[in-house]
Length: 89
Image 1: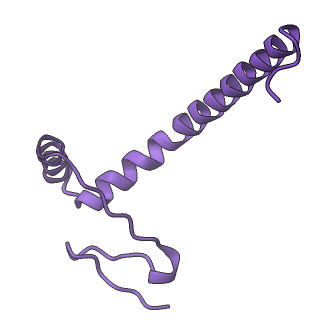
Image 2 (image 1 turned 180 degrees about the vertical axis):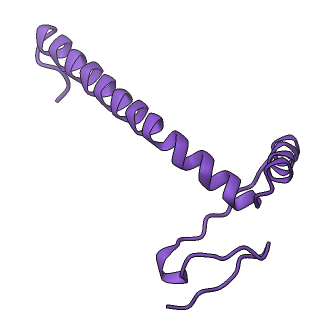
């Protein structure tokens, strides 16, 4: 495996084990990210990765809840269309 260092000098995971993601951040958010990185002594990437790892389970739960709600709304619409005469053709 080819180990490299990130642009901030921290060891990076092997290239084959990672996917690059580009984010466009508003200036205020970038200032907050820089502040957090400086305060914790971590790179921006490390801060973002830690936040994602911490929040992904909650986001996955939210996505599942949204998917269930959409399915419920679609079911209700189908039932309503059937009551009104069979729906669109």
